Structure formats: structure tokens, C-alpha cells
Image 1: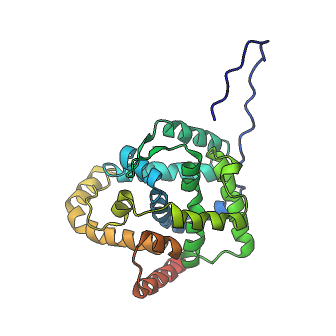
Image 2 (image 1 turned 120 degrees about the horizontal axis):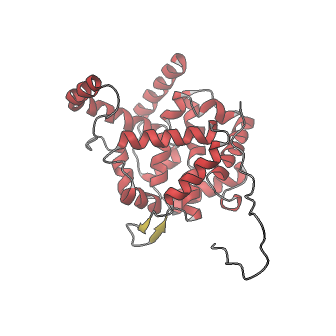
Image 3 (image 1 turned 90 degrees about the vertical axis):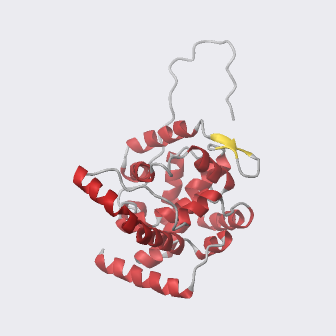
Length: 274
């Protein structure tokens, strides 16, 4: 809602900005999992769920550089996520930076409907996807959350939403309120968008990483035609496997019993190693 311009009157003096929202607590659930390599493995699953919303998918399709600079885009996104959780006073400023960045992201989706990145329902869904994906991935890559940990995780995720500038009225405030909202989104809003197809494909061109020492970049460039196909298959395997089953079903992403057994073996190996 656009605030009304105040009429003539006495000088109100300096404007006080309301206190910044608090980041997740030190030592909390998010503090423990956000920077863990196992938590990072689940980020592609959350991204696919985000772009399954037609408006979000259209925004990424029209405005993101994920096709031309996927590694740089991923690094910037990861740095932002780390600030939300571990940034202290910098967390709220990062949230404001993201909102400024998204102000100009608008257009028309595949169905001819107008979208804007900061429309509350769209922006809130992007944030919401993190909770069910983290909850599901934890069952494979770590110890499943207890009921108390799950509630704490959701409460901390609400704090992240406030950092991102999402109002409480636009986020389910309890776990009990979240699941009906989530299932309604799966049933009525999400679809297998063009960007979803690209993110789970194994045959799309992806440029080699562009960072690191020159000899490493040259080596990767030479070996990339050999390395990319197996890496793409692993990416799809983890992206689809660490997505909640009801979300996979809503998007029509195939997942077999054989793949499920392989994911369980992979999770055991990761838990043992980490």
C-alpha cells in the first residue's frame, strides 16, 4: 500500500525508523544448519519450488542471469542467505538491499498475467519454501527434527521473513497454519514452469565455473564436456530427491523406489562423513 502524502503542518522533526527485526538467535536451529554443507545441498530443491510459482518463475526467466552466470548467481544467493542467519546487524540491511533489488522486477507471466516480485503473496512464497525443504532434507542428511525443533525452526524462519521485509499478516504464524497454506499452494498455484524444467534438466548447457586460479579455470574448461553430464545427473538427483514428496507429485517429477533407496544410502554416507 502506498502511504499518503501528508498535508501541510508543523515540522514533525527527524523521522525515526522502527527497530530492525531480529535475526535468528545464536545457537538456534537455523544457526546450526544454515552454514552446514548438508543444508546447502537442499537449496536447489527450494529454488525449484520457488520458480514453480508462475509469477516467480516468470520473474526469474525474464530478469535473472542464472543461465549465463549460474555460478556467480549461486554465490551471491548463498552469501545473502548467510547474512540473514549470521549477519547480526547486517541481516536487516541485506533484507532492505534485496527489496530494493526486486522493485524493478515486473512483467507478464506465461498466462498473460501481470506480476511484480514484491507482491506479498509472491514474495512470501519464495521465503516459505525453505521450511518444508529443510524439514524434509534433514530426514536424510541429518537427524530428523523433533517436534520442538521443528516448531523452533519455523519460529526462526518467521524471523528471516521479517528480515526480508515480509509482514506477519502475509506469513502463516504457526506450523499448524503453515501446512494448509502450503498444500493450497501445491494444489492451486504451482505448475511445472519453463524454469522448473531447466533446473531439473540434465541436457542443458551450463558454463564451467569462472572463478579460481587461472590453471584451475583452464583445466575445468578443458574437462567440462566430460564433467558436466555426471554433475547434471547428480544435481537432478539431489534436487528432486530432497524435495518433499507432495511437492514432487504436484510438479510431476518422477521419483522411483530405486532412487529413494539410493538417496537413503547417500544420506547415510553424508551423515557418516560430516
